Length: 334
Image (cartoon, rainbow, N blue to C red; front, top):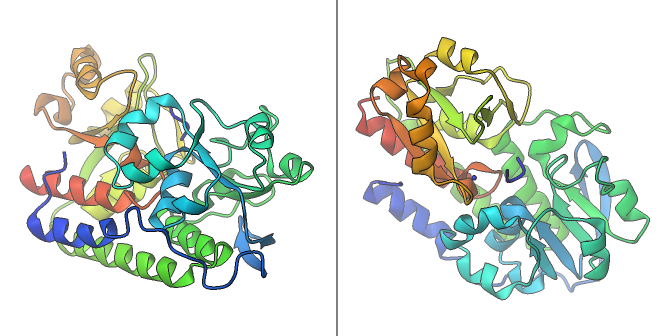
């Protein structure tokens, strides 16, 4: 998803989450000397060989926080992020890393930004950073000496791949691949094991012997709502928390649907994605004002749960999003 975006977690969840936060701001040194080797990983179904990046750039929360969580802030040339994501920075466990790494742009990443920064490597998603229409693709960047890594979550729509990987598994794949590329494999393996353990704990606490709560993700949109399909992180976040995304059959990452489809699905909970530009409370007020939604259980029962954009795009905070939603579902008896 390109930016167009309450935890009340129990003590046990916060304790587990603290393990991840202990790495904040701590740079992890490569296990082999930088520049000493090339590494081959599978990215979007292809074997890609990378020299160890010397001037890497990350796009958006997804790219930046995958790097930060691996202790790579000190090795980054910079990051690019739409200013609508600023609240995600303010609430990030890696807020200090955002402050010390140069921000190269406050809109979309472009080839010009990367060339001017003398970047040699960039991480972004297909159709969320890389784009044929905007003239920034891995192939075009290769021509100017910049290597690319695509978020695995977006590979399903990448013309050269169409690799279909569940969002959370895609997250783990990216972290392990970045561990290889930057030669911080022990940290990557430790982080993935920690995230998996937290996901298992959330699953274990989900209600048993009851149908999953029907959940609608509302990002934005008035004439048509913009929501999460089965290829986007919220699909897995909802499933782990014990719910079901009402658009889990939508063959998209993020996309528009009709209000009629929302009404027909009768969501019991609406997750509101929070970022700058329009407050979550304004979004909730809008949803409550729509006559066609008046009979929808989530609106009728005032069941709205706000989650940060930073928790909803592919990245290590996805697990925090699942923990938050799971706690909310339990609080309403689901």
